[in-house]
Image 1 (tube, rainbow, N blue to C red):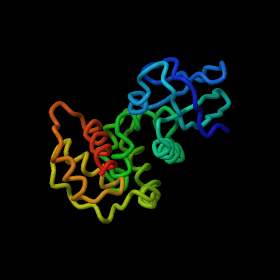
Image 2: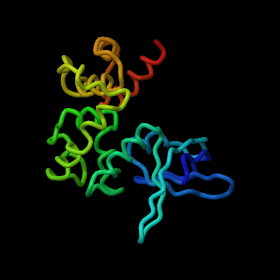
Image 3: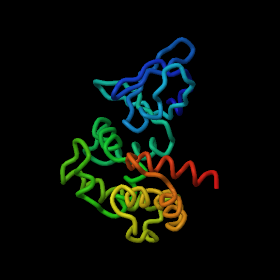
Length: 197
């Protein structure tokens, strides 16, 4: 029903935001990465949304990017994965890494996400492995084992999943000052650098 909502960020909580548009405050459930993108009340924002309608609930879910919304839609299409679990997964694992994790069948990494047991992780991989491989920016067959390790290796894998070559991504990561940076911080900074090259 709503493709996106554009308005003023009114309020931020740990698992939802409120966006005001035309005098109406829309309460939108979202993930931790999107909340970090929507951090300053008063700023103009665009939230890509999905309306959830069940017998006992009508709610809005939204994200800072259309790609993250698409990953949410893929996850909730899996039997047994509801809105809460899908948001929990996206809050635990950046969606840029999630496609790589699903595509390579990494059950252990998936079970590290909040609310995901082994059976659910196996079902996600079984039902989504081919679908994430068909996403335009996920070329899983071309992904080698990262030569960088730890957080840098995770960031490299995510950037390759997004369509950058391994050498491009590795070159940018190696040129950065990574002191105190999380995987998400490394990915965001690397993307900024890659997009200005």
